[in-house]
Image (cartoon, rainbow, N blue to C red; front, side):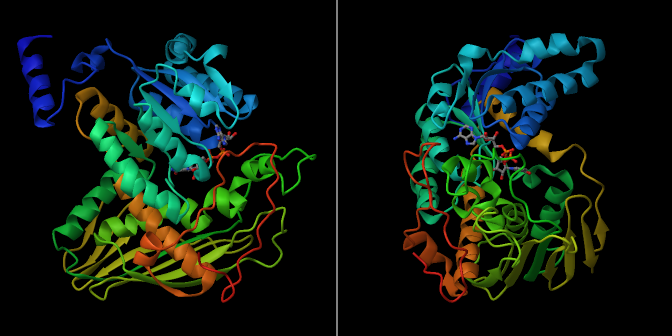
Length: 438
Ligand SMILES: NC(=O)c1ccc[n+]([C@@H]2O[C@H](COP(=O)([O-])OP(=O)(O)OC[C@H]3O[C@@H](n4cnc5c(N)ncnc54)[C@H](O)[C@@H]3O)[C@@H](O)[C@H]2O)c1
């Protein structure tokens, strides 16, 4: 390390008030590898694996925790094909440099994470169904691992409180980095749009409308073996999108992205919500789970502003996803692509410069290499909090204060010490007006 680089490194470490980082800045030149382990390597896990490799070639995948061997094989194949396309004749060599997981560091079962945490991984990527996220984050932090946690980071009030009260401070006190998978935060055009809103370019925010209507009801991505029945835990974990305890329902599992964009633009959390929702009558029950297929929640803010939040996944309906923030001087039209401002200061963005799913990992690996603080858990938990409150209001059809969810709700949907062979009776689909808030 020359003197100039040393001074830069020392200044970064000093600025962060921390010890010198484990990874030298020379890592970018090929000297240090960041070791990554995956827990959950299905659709998004495989996507995140490829995004990580695109974000930083200097990583190694050293361990995997999964339930099913075919998912690991499928992920390896996709990574190998991706590297083959990217590096042409050198694809296989690159794959061998990156994929260091062996039979000894591939673990199966609901407790696979415990074995993954005994490996030398620096970062653990948590990409299982949502129900496991909070307990897995806790295990990772206690084991001293940095974390990539896909959204949502919690599914109920018990998990939410655990995150706010214990896990956010634990990560900070240990100087561990946590990236959460609300990737729109790394979308350059949305970043610019939010900066413009902060700069007063649409005036004071008075309302927002965020609709996410999908034209199909999402359930499992894979076939469920015929011998499994809906009350088998293994059935529910395979079909996790359809069950409330595994997914948190659409409003928490998927729509949290949109709530996160709305809350980011508005810049504060609501204080009250009133909602309603239901389930398309011909969605098979219990085979397709116990969740709603639509939720509509009206959130109120302390200053009188409101957010209309609606999500739907119903077959043969119109897909529609407008995200609008209304101010006293203009309107921000957000999207996953271009952003626009209408009104006194009209503006239209370019498309984002690089996919946000890559940028998020650049941010995490950059923080690890530079030893700079990086903990996005509280921000992601805030959006999950608002989603959980909205869901409960929609199920009950009742007006709720968000503080009630945070301070009083005893909801605890995820059983401890689960076994894949356990039985778990399928809950009834909530009925507005009858659903009991706990
Ligand atoms: N950020 C995004 O845009 C985005 C997109 C899609 C999914 N996601 C999130 O990613 C997560 C995973 O979604 P997916 O589509 O990949 O689901 P998936 O069903 O394709 O993959 C989940 C994998 O986790 C494995 N698994 C389940 N429980 C496990 C456990 N306890 N230990 C180890 N492995 C376990 C399953 O076998 C499966 O292969 C969800 O939280 C989802 O909300 C995020």
